Amino acid sequence: MAAARLRLLDKIFPVLILLCMGIGLILGKAAPEVGQTLEPFIPLGLFLMIYPTVTRVPFDALRHSALEGRPALLSITFNYLINPLLLFSFGWLFLRSYPDLWTGLILLGIAPCIGMVLVWADLGGADNALSVSLMAWNSLIQIVSVPVWIYLLVGVRVPLPSQLILESTFLYLGLPLIVAYLTRHLALGAKGERWFKERLTPVLGKIQLAALLATLVVMFALKGEVILNEPELITYMLLPLVLFFSTLFLVGTLSACFLAKLPMDKSVTVGFHVTGRNFELSIALALTAFAASPMVAVSTVIGPLIEVPVMLSLAWTGKRLVEHFPLCCVQSRADYGERFSVDEWC
Image (cartoon, rainbow, N blue to C red; front, side, top):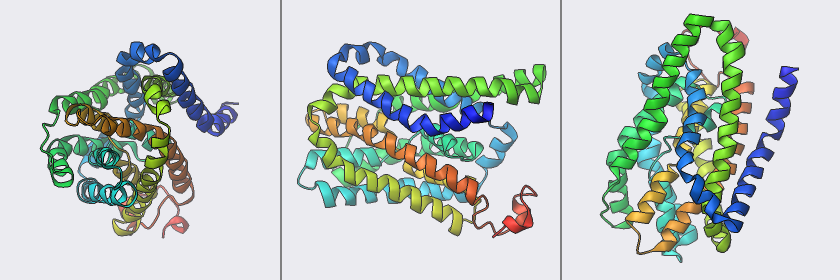
């Protein structure tokens, strides 16, 4: 019965996501005060999305993942060398007649996600321990990289809202790690591993799902009026962003698989972390550093509207890759233990 419910939820999950986005947009247009009133609850919703994911991570595995050089090197190379130039190029191809939208596109591309990416990676069958460690790397490096890339690509010197990055890092990485560690330690000590996996983990999964759906409603209610008032902007931003997300996930995952020789769960982890974007930071930069050009902010607001359904489809793709090609092209059986039979190795 439980397995049947999980299969049903897996099938209707994309519908629930799109439904919540639609409800949020309608609320944003019909009653914009709803989004403004509920905006302070967005950080809580994001925390409740991330915390269950981190709770499932064995902390011994987390320490090991933080020392893995190949996935970290790939993630850093894509996020801080390739991605900004790639999105700049897509902007030149599709948006050079709309310089403010092009600038917004660049802002969306210069910083990797340090929040929602854990949720998408978890849904996509990724290695959660590696996912957390890659997010830690990204939260530190973007403090230096973001103003440099804005200056190189846009030609504007901007003061980076470093307080925003530090607050996001604590909320989406530090606090979930602390609470997750305490949860695991207390639950395993008091009730044992079986109770933790069979009783507590499903409850946390329901909390995560409810927080995800509720947060999407609030996020899109907050920005729905802006988006629906100028829907043609979605069509301008759609193709470059879809190409950007799809290309990065595909190339990032395949690079991890065939170049770094990682198993598929780690490969899709890299894929998600080079794809997800820090739209909270891009919107903050647009509203502060580019306040004189309001269309820049509007373009960054459109980013999550396109990113959410694309990342949802990539989560489905990643999960299928992990299920059907678990080992990808791992070179050494000794590297990853005895979890799979000999016939499954490349």
